[in-house]
Each structure stands twice: as structure tokens, then as C-alpha cells.
Length: 332
Image 1: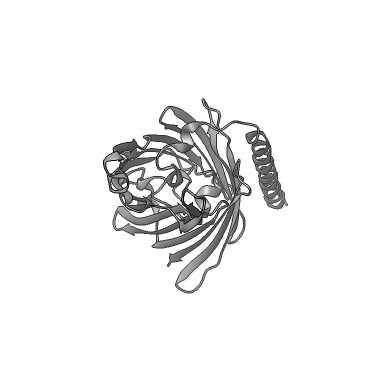
Image 2: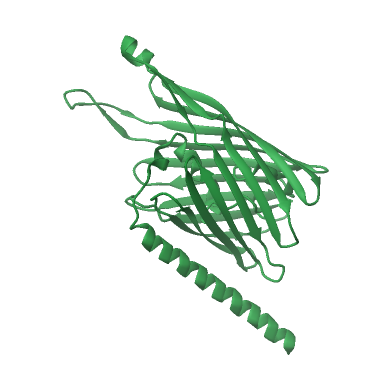
């Protein structure tokens, strides 16, 4: 009798937590629409800072210290050491204003205490109407910004891991106007207890786009350098032993701005999870927050476990929100 009461209380508490979390997200979304945007979004590499895949974006991109589930080195290169089985993820973003955002990654552990990951992010804008000085349509243009990432992590002991990501950014902005740059990410994860984990990441070290417009404008062209803002993030995650959910949060310093993020993932039924989070909670600049909601369905087959994931992001100043679709495949 006592066990049944305890089980019922746990289920009730979990549903109360879910409802409360969703209410907080909706309230935050309401207030976020009243804020003004800052200039941080216009800095180089903005599409590459939108997140990676349906899971991470749904959890407010607060995955710096998360070490369970589908892990992405995008958030912390040290996390690849905790990916127990080979996992591949493909993601597709549906955005307004002819924008695109796509993902591809493969993560694998290396016995006895290491891991690696290969990832690609593709972003850009299409259907750009090109016209001459007389206003006559000439052709349709598009842009393409890409990040190719290789991550390696090492876990010296069961409580500590560190990793590094080497990245190549390639931006095709216009005909004869392209730029390529290399950058590094460094990350570490420390397991503080059975339920609490801490993570720290420094991203986009030495990242910059170099532009030369001489091929377009001849002697009227010039050369410029656009440096990426350095990102420093510290995060905590809590995974209670008595409940099937994760709560994660993090603080980020990027350039001269500071942000806070929070996210959660709750296993409602076997193979079914719901997620929610708030990204880009500005602490010292006027910038709208970006709440998100998501869910996933996973099934177990003989040798692999596919998972379909969906996320909706409330995007300020856009005709519509962002839809992220991901397919994750774990090999057993």
C-alpha cells in the first residue's frame, strides 16, 4: 500500500513539474516579445550559434553539462566520452524568410576512455532576388555558411573528462566573395555527484572571416576582417535518481554580453520524452529570449534504436517560429 502511494505521488509530482515548466516558458515568451533586440545577433557566425539538432534546441541549448541521451560535441567536446554507443543524427530546420539550417553528426566512444565526433552545420538564405540598376530581375542568389567539426575527448577517470573541437568555417556570401577560417573549442566536464554535473566550454577561439572584395570591385575593393565573439560557458545539470528527467542550466559570456539558459527533458512514458527550455535570456543587453518546446519518440529494434525528434522555437521578430526535425539512430 505504501509503495503504491509513493509511486502515485512521484507521478503526480512529475506532472506538476511538467505543467509548471511549460507555464514558465509561455510567460517568458510573452515578455520576450516586449523587448528590443541588441546588436549581438549581427556579429559574425550568428547562424552557427543557433544550436544543434532538435534535442539541444528544445532544451534551450543548455547542454554544456549534460552527459546522457544523444550527446553533441557542439555543446561540449568533452561529452563525446559519455556516448556509450555509436550514434548518428540528421536534422532539418524549417525557418521563415527563406532561411535554412541543417545538421549532421556521428559520435562514437573509443575504448577504454575516449570518444570522437564528426559534425556538420549548414545554414544560409535562398531565393534572394537579384536586380540591376533599372530594377529588372537578373538572377536568384543564395548564401551558404557551413561549419565542419571534428571533436576528440578523453576521460582520465570516471569523474572528469576534457575535449577539443577543431572547426572549419566556410562562408559563400556572393560570387567571388568567399571566406574560410579555422577555430578551436575547448571543453571539460566534472561529475560532482551521482546527480549533479558541471561543464565548462570556450568556443570559437581564433575564428574570423577575412573578406576581399577586389575580385568584384577592382581597385575600389578592399579587405576586411570580421572576428567571431569569443564564447565562454559554464553549466550545471541535475538528474535526480528518483525521477526520469534532466534539468540543465548555464551561463554564457559572449563578447560584451551575458546570457542565461535553462532546459529540461522529461521521460513521460517508455520511449516518449518531452522537452522545454529558454535560450538567450539576456542579463545585461536588450535582447528577446527564445523559448522552445519539443518531444521525441524512440523505439528499439533488433540492432538499432531510431528516435524521431521535433522542436518548435518561438522566434521573435519573425513571421513564424522555427521547426526542427531530427532523426537519431543508435547502434546497439
